[in-house]
Image (cartoon, rainbow, N blue to C red; front, top):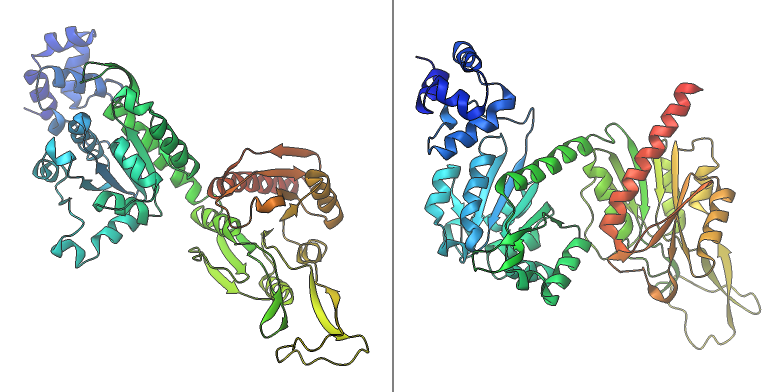
Length: 481
């Protein structure tokens, strides 16, 4: 007797199954003969097995994701819906996703780590301070290894911790130490979900790039009715798989494309202790470099002096002055795309006396030199120099930091410097420099887009999409030429 025949027998026989599924008995007989259930009837059979309390998974082939190498971390937080996370594990095990699971102490009040271990067939992690785990720095390994972290159920407590930078257990430490994409599937009392503190934390996390699977509305285990119900496990997995597929596509979006990015400030020394510079932190350029690297681009980042961690891209070059930046940009050409987000110092100041006597700038200029003035020497315009050169990249993107007439000044630069796209910032009152958020306008020759205020990470994501569109249009022009 073959597997499908056994399955049909367990479900009550050919006639009973045909009646329940409202199809002809001959179709069921054909399934038995071919030893195969059509894909469009798979879910119906699974539901029937669940209704009859028959374990039928062993009769059906696992539904794998084609050619997908993906690591996921599931964090289970405490709440009445914690038991539903077991169904999420069961569904994930039908794919070829590599899964690790972390449980909070509160979650262990509802389900046991042993149950999770038996389902996932791997160790369930529960302690931040574990001699065995911390000898291997597992809280860092668990933070860095997954492509996706799914927090399900996500409580108001874990939302508050991450929104405010708290790390007092394994789960919150992992979330704070991770570069991975994070998805929250909240579950809580409706009043708690709508509490002003929770809503503020929700907005904070959204701004930082956290994805949310919105909770359902209906009757709660506590007897109240409203929004806060844990989404169905199948919906959660569908959302996660959708992200995974999108991520796989994006990973090769800029494959074999070379991208050169300038970021941060430049500094122009006056003497060994004094210099001219600006307030640029490099954050926006670094986020752009990270996003384009994630999408498969061969990114070279040329950065002025900054105080933030460097992104993980193919090549990083550190410079100080505008001339050094221009020289290194030139040396990296040709490239497919150039993005000039650096805030290059417009001038360097040459100290002189009124009698034009030479001043030794190798040593500190003394204050007793009262008759001193500075001659401004203009630095090279890197963006314009490269854009008008005979080695101009296919796509050239610039940034324009303005305090007045933001869009008009940016458009004027776009036209005069012969570039494809310019991103305009309003930097008056220090609105942008050093901040984590940005409000920009995207300006092309015949197109203008104003984007809402969002995290610099989010700006980088949407800018990468825009650059991809520009590259597609460029390639189309090349084909039609």
